[in-house]
Image 1 (cartoon, rainbow, N blue to C red):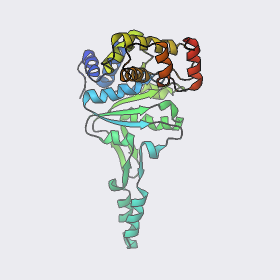
Image 2 (spheres, rainbow, N blue to C red):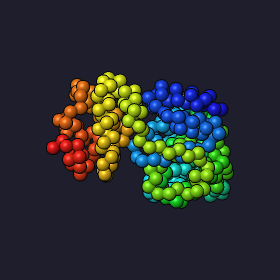
Image 3 (cartoon, rainbow, N blue to C red):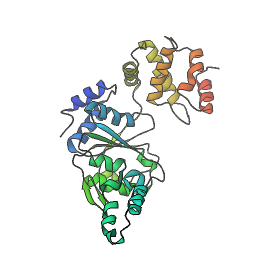
Image 4 (tube, rainbow, N blue to C red):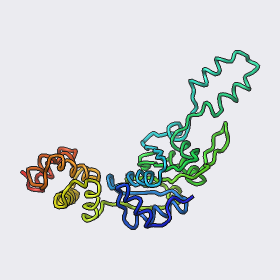
Length: 286
């Protein structure tokens, strides 16, 4: 059953959670829901890719199931594994060798299966948002595992057979584009590229998330962050850090972002010493 009725419905309900979605984001999210296709969101770190999945979950009243990808992630951490300790106890508790066939069937039954995020999302009958975060950090073998899940929304377990989704989750995959994803994976998804918002949109985001901030202060924060992103930094400020900076200034009772305040609070948006030094020089804060 579709969670959203129209593109405008997506925009309005995401906005109610504090996530201001532009036309392309709202349209693609609507189509992912209506067509029941996974949504691959690619772009720089900190542009709101993960937050989109969280906002969809809140807006639709769904449970968020998150799989954080990393190098070396395997099936046992992503899909399922057997509870070996419990299996061993069951085997030790059975002293009748003639009953081994029964014991074998028991220890590879549902009671001994540990659901990991992919299987947990597939098996849920309630509305679910499955977030596969930073999929570009996973190995190519992990992409192969995702293909079966994202193609037919089913999981094959040799001892139990094929488990098919009772209710398809809303799937969001995020990628920072640190490597090229396989064409097979991309074919199974709708694609959305996200970049940093325009200054006007980011100002609206700041005011929505930090309503205590004055409009002038929000404008100054966004203007400064935009200037910082134009520098060659190791890590450009994310939207979340822009919001944190505005909250910091409100907590300090600042109604204006002057040079002294920027120097004193620069660590909120730049977490690298070299980046801070470059910013101080570029913004003439010395």
